[in-house]
Image (cartoon, rainbow, N blue to C red; front, side, top):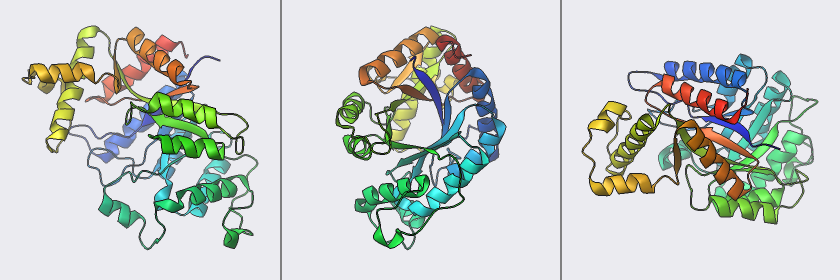
Length: 333
């Protein structure tokens, strides 16, 4: 089977835009990616952010699923460490009733926020991260209609009833998450754009250690940051922009992301330029054929069945065009 492609959308808020603009862009992008032949479309969970609008994937999924007709729509992901597995299961069972056969439930254990925000999200919840495996087991039971692990909840059923169930994924960026996914027999997606170094090893470990339970066989994806440009010069501009963004972040400079013009005018040192080209393992930026080759090579090395592509550019038009060029390169449509 050829490599499937999906989209990870963090609903970025561009310079001079607001959250409403970002969500409108997400709706437009989802519609276009549905037309282009992408297999799935995931929305992220980020809190207390001035630059990312997707704080509630459950709500945004409802809008995007209504805007599309073919793609699977889901969370990439819900940060289960904050929440009740029962409540998450009911949210996604309801989504499955609304859009049967099209809903993905991706869960992660990262905070998706700073420590104070994480505490506010878990307000009154005394359970620490050490309970995460038990939460996953209970969530799987509630979603699929089986008996939960927690004895006090043995007779509890999540509603509404549905003929189908959401497709459950475990998201991660470490060997620990890969181990959990293998242990519970779940599909696993590794965020290469967050942690590129362990990506190949973690995905290989997942496949080697997989124990059939929720699924009968391992199934995985790799999340990559990629930008497809019309030509090499524009691709180099995007690389410089990403490097300037990293420099500002490392220096604690907050504010809107830089523009291509700012990146072109910035006086990069030789060390900056070497760093920029040395960090290509975290991102794949280039022409359509270059990005296609980079994604295929990485997925093959990791043994991934799918690639989930995150693209952020200063303008929505360039972001949309990147996904169009990538779909054309892979022959999706």
